[in-house]
Image 1: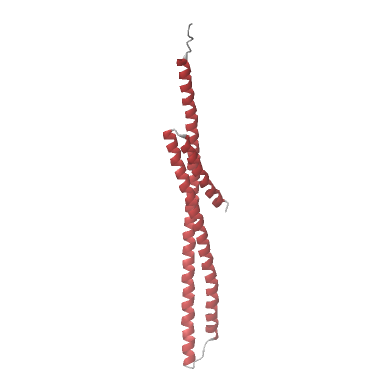
Image 2 (image 1 turned 30 degrees about the vertical axis):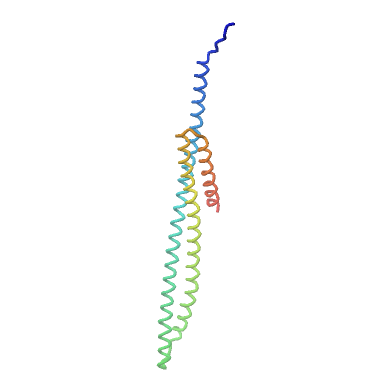
Length: 178
């Protein structure tokens, strides 16, 4: 009985070519997803930096308001001392002086409200900055794991990369629309 010879050499070459072509497509997907993650990382870093700047600006404004508050308090204290000294010496007091003391105290109340508002805004921006910074970190980790996936040709790392990217995207979307 004669054996039938199957031309496996051609089949083997065809399988190798298909596997290489399949890997090229998959690697292209890893590269594309990494590029998209890089765009999200860049945009998120820009937003995080903006919120950090706004937090600092509002903190400075609050500090300025507290300094102004203290200046009004010093003026009120000096004027009150003047009034008390004049009373102790049985001298006449200008009517405007007592009104000014009251005005300084009213001004302090308004200034205090403004300072507290700036502090709250600063805290809000700082919280958003921190959340966006977490998103940037997750996007960067996702990109790095994607690179490991491409280098080792192991899809499991790509899935892990997409997991990190997905969590980063949740942070991004939550803060972007907050």
